[in-house]
Length: 129
Image (spheres, one colour):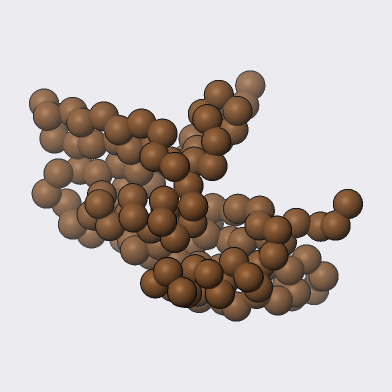
């Protein structure tokens, strides 16, 4: 078994695709509209679905906003340099909600950014090998 994807609901598919592809550097892997169900699915990731987990962006036509709730935490992404990643994300118009730095009670360097719908993405700096 393996994790295939994580699904999140988005209020503006174009805005979300722009964030995940242009700000975070993912690729749009596939997009499918379902007119009878009035929804669109877009799958984004850093590589092919066959090689790793991806994010499914679900856009229900006519729904502009969702509450993220208290149960969902975040999506984690490994980056080479969390400080540089934050600077680039800000340069591209992204929102950094926790600047890069060592995590509380540890030494791992992390940061948090927020997508246009308020979902948090944790940036975890890769450890030197």
